[in-house]
Length: 178
Image 1 (cartoon, rainbow, N blue to C red):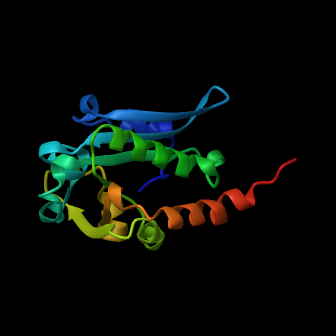
Image 2 (image 1 turned 180 degrees about the vertical axis):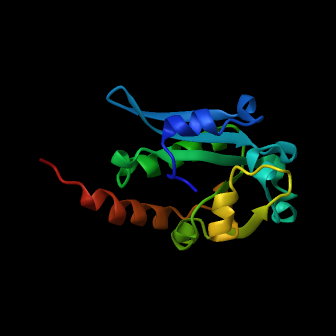
């Protein structure tokens, strides 16, 4: 679901009851906010992912208190396709580790699953369904796709060689110096 809205919209329209427990990282370029990512401790099943989705709780039951949810990941279209997305994810990853978390939980496109499995082999993907709490905010998404992929990512299992290869082949090798 990342990248479907701009950062200002993400911060103003998607507020939830967990915002006061969350940390939001903002990316700024030339005095303009161009990206955002929200990090919420998932302790006691209290984060947005549990508010809106169901069908994966059993999978995370034993790790929930060691987890953070990554949400509201949005980058302005004019700034996509470069280092910003990987930089923001790495920043969130580092922040979560420094706060004592061992797992990331987030929703995202299934298209990144194979790449993510190469970098973090123990990554799990679970198709979650909307819960029946009366919230209709994401009905359009569920009508189109039926479910939302929930990623469970163990941060201590990063394949450094695969990450370095990805960064080099996908990003660094494409830099042009003028």
